[in-house]
Length: 425
Image 1 (cartoon, rainbow, N blue to C red):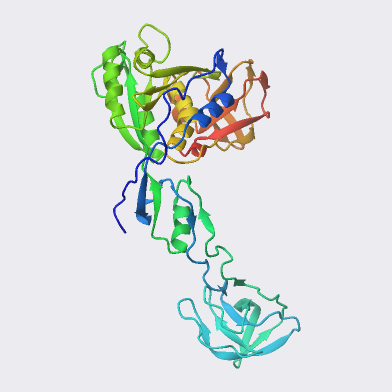
Image 2: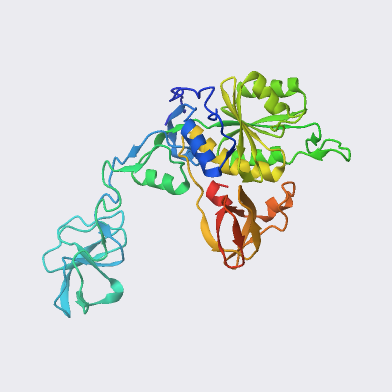
């Protein structure tokens, strides 16, 4: 095993105009916005070589992996019992037992004579001359002879060599985020290390004169910063490297300095607040003055303003300031974008059609994301749709997504529920 080493960025940097919208585009439906984003992003991180199994959890595979060994490497027994040559069709019958046994880690070395059986334990290699195993509960040994009453197909209770994995099978593909179960697959064929992408470095920046870090003194017109801890926790839970860019006041020079600091350390920057077109929306103003910005007006509630920009070669995702809107936009747009930038696969979260236990008259025009959870086989939604109600985030376990069409939801109506777990959270 060796220390991980980078071989540099595998692809060219993102273009400065990669987020530009075609002329005349105003409101963009969610699915269209996601497809636009997917088509314009690619991995921006380098590759670490020969990273050992113990350090792979959560990492993204950089190259396809092929099995150097079969699994299982030899035919073996799936149960404790007796090995014999199948099939067994003429019953009842009595077979003499060969001396010895085959156990896991201690295979039988000889050839089992024709018409004989031999003791075998779970996981043991099938002895030469046998291909079938009878469970010990289905037979009886009397005076060194095996008495059987039931028929057996040839190959019963036997695992074939390579029935799971054959030599040179592609067992995992590039872009796969490695989990404990996938690491088990690597270990099962003797792979000690693989090449993975470097961890995506994600900067998190909060803005706003009214926003104060937790622990700072506040007045009654100021609020504590809920977005930066929330987004930071999201980044680390997804397995990326967090770069805390702190908080910037609503001054162009402060926002510019924070973004410049981020470009030196980050592959992507997430900001919250200041992305609309108001007098004090200095994130969008700074990105417009010193970068390439496109304000995507997405037909989504809560949300709408989503600033996508390139600033000194680094992509910036400008999220709304309200915590619920920031969370929803980070989930639907930030999470898949980060996955692709990190070398992983673009994904749509797994969703389930589940009966609603609520009523709602939805107007046409925008997709709506409702904080929701499942209880007793039905989806319930948080009592308030206000985007400042952070208690609804803690209460919820996922989102109900209602598309742009007009809808009349009544109890029992199937709705699309996306658990937070399907985003990797």
